[in-house]
Length: 243
Ligand code: F6R
Image (cartoon, rainbow, N blue to C red; front, side):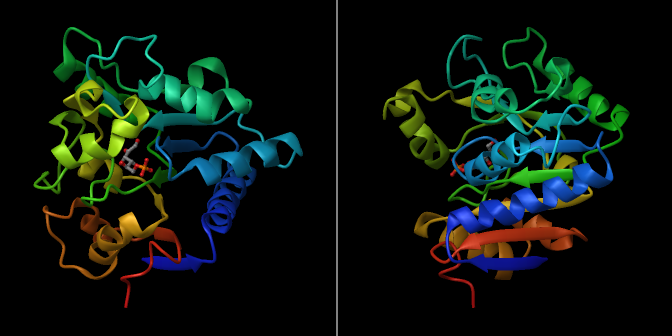
């Protein structure tokens, strides 16, 4: 695990974008794994700039999002389908059908989970997975006590995660869905390169566990200690508890 402590989140975003640009220059049809939320925004903003300057193109790239809320109406602005389009996908030149996410409104959610796993394999697997980390150590929505070998499945969101995400729902935790579909820890571990980005004091304990804690289902991100190629990009606040 390579840990890079940056002066600020903008620099962490620049380094994350560098990795994606280098991958796409080498492999234009690479498969990207996309996280939603605040953490990857500096990476996405930088990638939009690099696209505008003509340094990189996503025209042949494919992408899979990590997770989706269950039961949010398709026109709700906080479905992860809508969030990733607004925050990143529609700001660059992805082909319309090249970005995939689990359908949180499907009648048969277990079938959706199974098909999502198959679609990732059929695409050739994820070349580079972008991750954020929850204050409780989740990656994707693999909450504490998730199986370290888990695959894409339905999960109950932890109370802490719903409190953390209430800021996207007008501050009202009751509006945050209770369930989600998430890639499993085993799914994430299959990605060839993982780039995890974290900023702010609120992430310091989870980052400490990720980097220095024992591997434990109670801090799901710690499974990344067993991954052969992980880059962790931190600002100084998120790195505050790393020895
Ligand atoms: C989002 C996801 C989550 C977030 C995490 C951190 O697709 O899978 O693991 O990365 O909850 O969220 P932010 O970045 O908003 O602090």
